[in-house]
Image 1 (cartoon, rainbow, N blue to C red):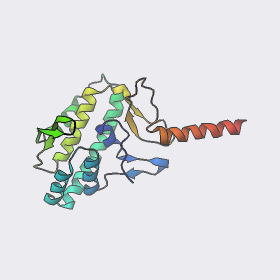
Image 2: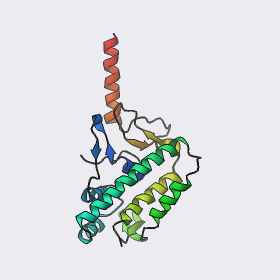
Image 3: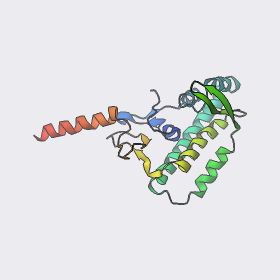
Image 4: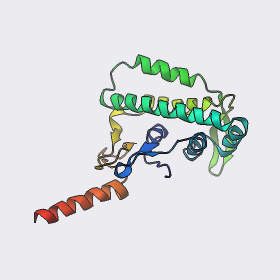
Length: 197
């Protein structure tokens, strides 16, 4: 199944790399290749860098990194769920672990010409495949340091497991997607009203 990018933030999209539509668990980053592909689609890695990583590292190495990413996702999911409910708690252990991941990065900024002017782009100089996890750690750091924890929500869809960052003006978003889960909820409510009449 294709990855979903409904989270409103790359860190949330990373949490959503496993989900259960209609109760069937889907794993988006099951191996190293799918992990690299997801990172490119999430714009955490550019295609040339991903191609270079594919050439430099064996499938076994990349599969091991994908397994580490899945473990990271499980840990971060638990942490973000707690953080969204209790933002003022102390998270020293979590921050130490996140900082250890951030220290793996070898990144730099580059100024490039874009269609709409000049912009700064974060570039990665990958010395080690494990630095891929540092790219995700950077997004997690941005989430917890720049976003309101109470706006991280779980979809209200009956069988949906996706999360999102509610960036709506009134902060009343309840579904990951109005077209999918929102529509299913409306249809279910309509059917319940028809049955009770």
